Amino acid sequence: MLQVTQYADEAHHSVADVAVLADPGRIARRLAERVRPRDTAPVQRGRPHPVAPPEPGEPLRPAHVFDLLAAGIPRDTILVEESPSNRPELHRRVPARDPWGFVSAAAGGLGFGLPAAIGLKLGSPRRPVVAVLGDGSSLYGIQGLWSASHYQAGVLFVVMANGAYAIMDRLPEHSGLGKAPWPGFAEVRICDTASGLGCPAVRITSHAQLVQVFDEILPSLAERTCPLALDIEVAPDATYG
Image 1 (cartoon, rainbow, N blue to C red):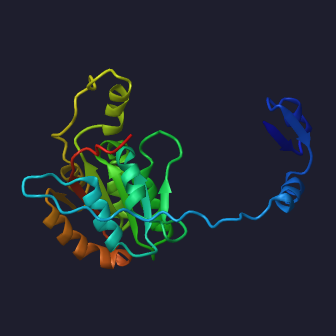
Image 2: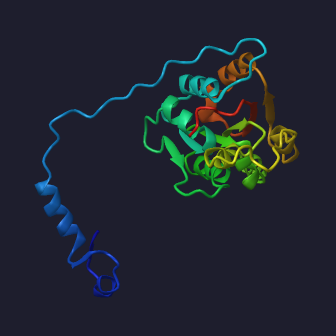
């Protein structure tokens, strides 16, 4: 490990194998001069084909939600993500096409997504803002829906309601310990909580209902000043991991 710093005290206390006392900007420029251009074009990875709608009696899956979202959101949408168990599927199916097209937390703490989406909408009122949240992670900052309503932040909150902390449930499963020892919370209704905080909300349990709501909301998303929470009942994403 090599560290370049212009501060002698940092170099003195560095844990790096080699600490160089120099101007980082000049070092970076000299390194850039020595880097050779790539001989091959970068690999272009296409999105997977849309999944077929669920059969009668089958639950919605995250892929159904993300396929419809990708097809309907405007190009300049700011998408805020805090749904850890669904993140791999979201990455595969919803592209980020403009700057700030995808915003997510780098660390593992929960509670960032809902208030961050509100702040981004207030800071960029002319851009559409969608927050893809887990029902578990949304509970860490659910009171932010009151702020979204009272400050007229027209965010579309897409809550993936699988009735559990699915990302936490994976820990004992992947460790060979079997089923998680904690209970789920299938009885929790984010739509009821949102309504109690003054934020309009809709509970969605079918593909047809989701298509109808997206068709109504997504084309005019940039102009919205009223938030909307979609409490979407989905099966846990079995592809995670």
